[in-house]
Image (cartoon, rainbow, N blue to C red; front, side, top):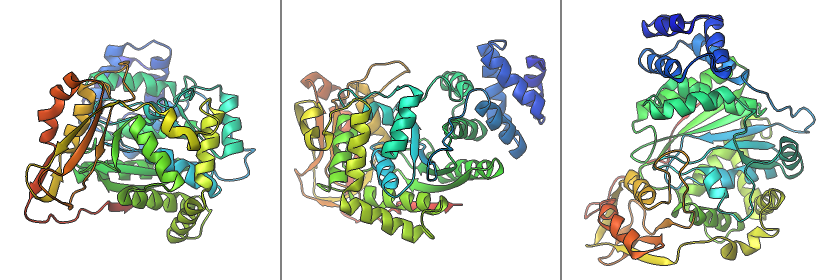
Length: 437
């Protein structure tokens, strides 16, 4: 084993680490031969000095090799996944996975929990009574094989080094490091056994990557490293300057997702993003000969109702209600104390401060302030107007679902500042800002 101190010093001084040094450091972290303080120092050194492409490849492979890789060789079709960098109202995975599974892909999705203002897919799914996000591996494999998709949380066997590093990054202000982000995302996805990945890298006031240049750096890094290690990958850089869809919260987002799948109500921006991502996934993995044909196939399957049935099978196989797409309105618990935020004047909705909405939900317990916090799945917001919509004075902008009046008092003034109204119609914001392939 290389001496950890020397590896940290070398990276601190801006030097390039070799394969043995990187693999030795990751191995030492797994074996508890390296302290949290040393991992923290290593992460901070990478944060300030970055990594070369070759270093990122070594680091990603070392993370992958820290655990096992799920084998899907027996499946009769390509295995692929999608990953989002997170945003407010992002329920894309719940809808996209069953859509592309209905088109012939197998999707073993290892998803995460929310922290801070961005929600987590696993938290949303845990608002479904009985849904098990931590099944045994064989059960998970059987569900993916028989249903086409399965969405669960990260297991202890897949990329365990990432769990160690991420927990330390989270409390040492080293999350926003492109090399560390790249290795963290790719190690988990490749350990899940996929051969293709589409990234949804969000940018804007409600995103992890607030500015476009940082989002593009993340997208390009992940696509390039993926190419070098044999994973088909592409990325869409998408707008997060307003909530995605009609809702934000856990139960309310699951309800919106099922509404979408069964055709009851579909947000246009959400629909566009999902179909764009589906097109990329289906083209990249050989199901369709072009992105456009992939988009058409996905929209057709959605119209025919197959993804709703696929989602229903996934839920029931993972312990949820047997006929969830029929009973979801009763199964999901949504807080009964309802309040409205209304427009104080007529005009166009010219902007949303999406971060404020995410933070407000966290303040009252609908999100986590720190890892391990319990959350109330029943709390949430419905967004009744989008950027560019004309609203009259007194018209409802937000519907707030809480438990008590006290909760509303905590956030009412805060969320009144989450939107702006102007007499001048704002320029429309592109949803898909750039595609990186």
